[in-house]
Structures are given as structure tokens and as C-alpha cells.
Amino acid sequence: MRIGLLTGGGDCPGLNAAIRAVVKRGTSELGCSIVGFNNGWQGVIDGDARPMTRDDVSGILVHGGTMLGTARCHPHKVEGGMEAVQETFENEKLDGFICIGGDGTLKAAGKVSKALGVPVIGIPKTIDNDVVGTDAAIGFDTAVSIATEAIDRLHSTAESHNRVMVVELMGRHSGWIAVTAGIAGGADIILAPEEPFDIDVIAKRIKHRHRYKNFSIVAVAEGAIPAEGSNWSGKPTLDAKGNPIAGSIGHEVTKAIEAATGFTSRLTTLGYVQRGGVPTAADRLLGTRMGVAAIDGIVAGESHKFTALQGNHIVLEPFDTMMGKTKWVPEELLSAARGL
Ligand code: F6P
Image (cartoon, rainbow, N blue to C red; front, side, top):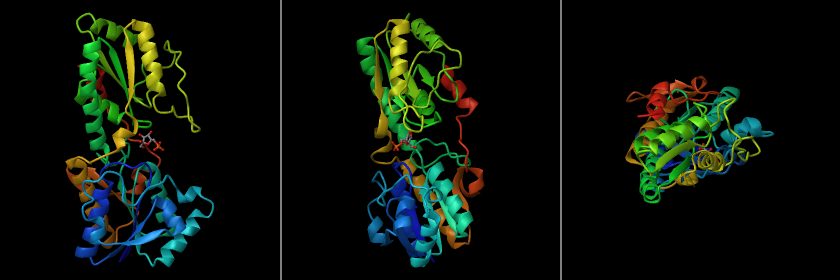
């Protein structure tokens, strides 16, 4: 078989592990040829392809990012996009696609598979970990490790300066990174989109804590929202899609805490650091296992599915399971984040 391979959406550590597994397993064990497309579905639309060999993926396991490049492109939203994908599929004499991406890119993969009737297997990657159907997506573990280390580091400077340190973490609309790194890093207050916050309650908790401690750490998800009717006058800056730009909700929360408590408060916006650098062992393993499952699956005739970690098993889950949905942080974790 000739299989097209692409990575789409925001990059993250662990993508190269999946690419490497598809190429090594596909070419050596399964007699396939793998055609890499640069820059996600945009590369498929443009026919920007290259054959991939074992040599091409040698040594990439530890590298962050994606050797294929990426872009936020969805063929069903591009004029003539689906036709161009069909044309490339024929020109390259492909038998199917393996598409590594987050909810947007996998949704596009599902639409390509259904509309064009071509075999497609998806592999979920996103530091936001918001893909329904899989316990974890590639990149999440590394992002949580980076965020936890940052929170660890903020403890010493917060304590030295008797300050409230607010750290804003990525996660788009869900709070997976803030909640898990917040708990692992011992943050005193964690704000996640799943649980709208009340700044008066936060201020009261910090004032109470500062009776016996001289510092606090507040972990804020970039998608955190104030509770309806709560005493909030913050005005986060929004992007064209109406999402708060990086650092703006963190900035407003920091300002509000300082005003309500009188304690000096400072903000750290972790930003793209959470998406960069060497993947953890867990993300290398997850990327490798999902890469193997994807190429084995498509060669076995599977299609319109994505690889999913369920418990400790990698299974193939229908695209419909995740399309148009968001995996929210469960109550069990939120209750742990609410206060220990
Ligand atoms: O989806 C991953 C992510 O890093 C989100 O956490 C963040 O909101 C967004 O991408 C940033 O998007 P961009 O890379 O387009 O700036």
C-alpha cells in the first residue's frame, strides 16, 4: 500500500515518535511506501509530497515539533479543497491517509474519509487533551511536565517575595493542563473553564491562607471564565475568533487578586514553552504505539477511525466519537483541584 502521512494543527512534542513508527513499521514490516505531506492538509491540497524512508526518521524520536511541518488547514473549509485532496490522492496513487492532529484536523480527516470514500486513520495529538474517546493525546504529558516544573519554580520566588504568583497555562477551551499541572505542582488555587470562578471567593481563600503562609500560587487556564453575576470587571483582550489572547485572562485575574487582597501579585504566561522541546518518555511511547496501530489498522482495511488510548490499550475508535465534541475535565479531578 501507498499511504499518505501528515501532521496538522498546533505542534507538540511526540509527533515525530508517531511519524517514525508509521514509517519504520510501514516500510520494513508491512511493505508499504509512505508519502509525507508538508504542512498538514495544506500540503495535501498543494501536492507538496515527499517519499519517506527509515533514514528520514532516524534519530527523530527525541525531537519536539514535527519533521513534516504543520498548518491549521481544513480542506472542507477551503474553496476547492476537497477536490484538490482527491486529485492529490489520485496523482500520488495513494491507498489511504494517516492524519495526526487535534480535534480540528481529525474532524477534517473524518470529512475527507466520508466525502471522498478514501481510507483514513487518525492519530490524536494535542497538549489540550480535549479529544473525546482517548484517555490521552500525544503531547499532553510533556505539556503537563513542563507546566508542573514551572509551578515548582514559581514557589521559590513567590515565597522569597511574599507574593501571589499567577501562572496562565494553555488548554484552549478545557482545563486539562491547568488542573493536572496545578495539582501536581501544588498550586493553591486552580481556575479551569469547566468551573467558572468567583474572584471574591478566590480573594477570601488567599487572605485566609496568608494568615499562616506568605505566598500563594494560582494556576489559571487560558480559557477560564468568571461566574455569571460574580463581582468581575476584567476585560480580557479577545482575538478574531472571540478567544482571550494568551496572557489576557491571566493578566485580569492577577490585577483583580491584587486589588481585592492588597497582596503584591505577578503573572507568568507560560505560552508556547508548553508545546516545545523534547517529548517525555510517555509521549514517545504513546506516539509510537499509536503510529504502529494506525499503520497496522489501515493495512488491515480499517478506515474512518482514530487510534485511542483506553485504559492501557490502544484501540481504533470511529471518528464520530470525537467529531464536534470536547473532552472536559471530569468532576473527580475538579474536586481534587478545588482544594486539598
Ligand atoms: O491547541 C493547542 C494550543 O496550543 C492551545 O492550547 C492554544 O490555545 C492554541 O493552540 C494556540 O494556537 P496557535 O498555535 O494558533 O497560536
